[in-house]
Length: 55
Image (cartoon, rainbow, N blue to C red; front, side, top):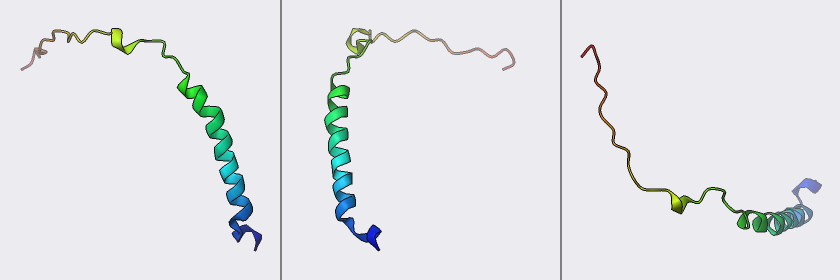
């Protein structure tokens, strides 16, 4: 049963992960965010409780 022999499948799996990591990791690490999260204020808006007319 050739599908039980892990030798070619493990090599293919390892090679695919190697290619995936060498191509995708630099792309994701070089990603620049369009919104700067540090520029947002930490001001919380003033909220008032809702007054229900039937209570």
